[in-house]
Length: 321
Image (cartoon, rainbow, N blue to C red; front, side):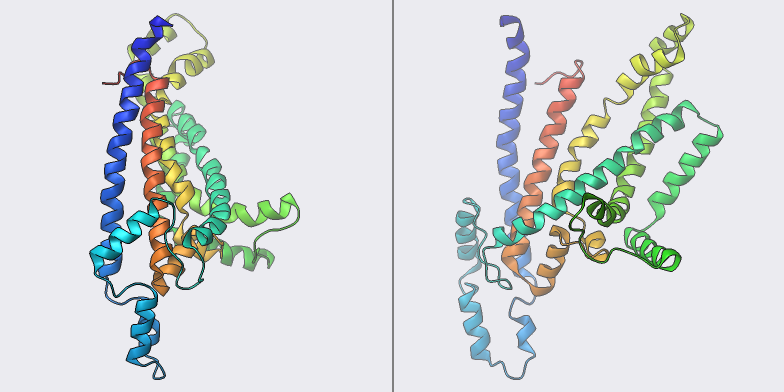
């Protein structure tokens, strides 16, 4: 046990220090978000301002009801005290606690995020295949695919997929799958493909670059000179070292899973957090916007911390200071 202490203590100190820094960072970010949202021209009463039946007194009563007549610093301190207890206020549009509304949309978003994450993981074998066949047809096809995937806008790819499926087979799922597992899969796979394409392209390019770099290392050439089988050299020497940096990318996927994708969810009518964020932005529903942005910030900070710690675990050369 004593031999483990030198390794445990630096990691523990690193995590504690990063947590303290994360709390300060979270406070700065949510403060900036709060003031930017409230200082934007317009407000939740803007939709009623052009209604001739709505008087100035009605708009004033509406602002008082939402607590928007108090000085902005006072509103911020009141919101911050409530947010510390996961109370982001009541939604102006839904007339319910904002955290409850977001929680209802979080399930579909996590499902879509995890499925798109599985799609994105296909980039790892594609990157390895391209690197091991550098300069050949397989490498050229994969590089062409990644170039096109990087250039395609998400909204265009989603709309094109809908149009193609409708024109070819006259069918496209128009509601969230229910009932059997197959119906759920059919409904989620297409938005997952669109959402996961960008990450898949990133994984493919990154893994290809890392594998090519490892292939040029002296210990790989030495293993090949000893006559070791190519599969053995690839799995035991090349992949084990080339895939270490991928761990860093995996940690940054966490906010991607929880925050949702506004464009993809809107195009495919997916009832997730991304679509809710768009609806709340249009309605100027401040509690919903602040709840989603705060949760996304927390997920980003946690994902970054997980990536840093995991990288040190899988790579013994990393030392925490």
